[in-house]
Length: 191
Ligand SMILES: Cc1cc2nc3c(=O)[nH]c(=O)nc-3n(C[C@H](O)[C@H](O)[C@H](O)COP(=O)(O)O)c2cc1C
Image (tube, rainbow, N blue to C red; front, side, top):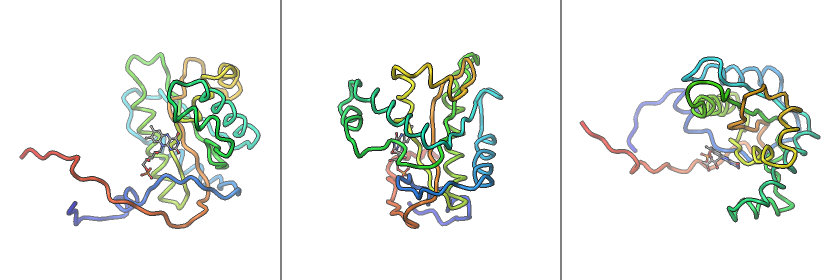
């Protein structure tokens, strides 16, 4: 693709990759606040309809991993069952911080998109300040497990809200990641 225009925002978008290996060290609170603020500024279809839950408790993160893997073992999709049964797989990649983005199911319009825009902003903000991040669907399987209802309560997800997406954050174990070219054949131009 022949794009000649560049700036910090465009570079950040292109440089962001899913990071799946993290240092143990927790991120700084000001880094967390910068990422969360970016989430709050994402576009939405329905105002004040999403909620961010930040989890930085290792014992709870490990429990979410185990509950998600237990639920994955029961899924129809073979790949998920394999991951559920893989003892080396940690669905949060041992990242020190998890942010769950939940949407208010009572809002009059579907909210998944509101949560998705916020999640993407979290990832881009993380990249822009040198943090590693990865969008994580897998951990949400924990809410399908036998402990699902109890976990919603423990995580203080507001009543009527559903966890739609999540992202892990931490310091990257490797400074550079390979950035493969994206397929520009996916675009149709009509002028
Ligand atoms: C809705 C959604 C769910 C995802 N869930 C997971 C996940 O559970 N675990 C994971 O490792 N990556 C997950 N990813 C990350 C994708 O695998 C990743 O974005 C994709 O392979 C492209 O790679 P990149 O992010 O490095 O550009 C998810 C991404 C999206 C958009």
